[in-house]
Length: 85
View (cartoon, one colour):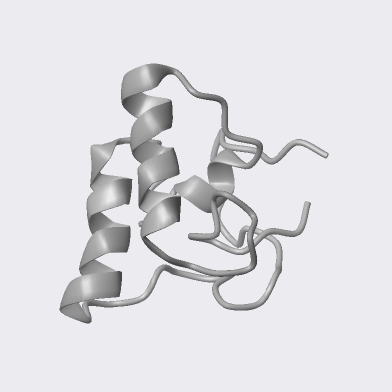
């Protein structure tokens, strides 16, 4: 399925709201439609590091998330994470 890495809340913007959704999923068991989009560092694991990676990109001008980023695409790496229709 097509997705944009980092756009976890699917509002066509990558911002602090996406990091909050990742944290809500991890600590409050809130559902996420596309776990691949939440895997900000593309290591195949949905974890606290993903929210930190995204926040570092947004506020500390660190490296952007790996592809597909800014434009929708398919995940180029094999992992167990997926997106629901």
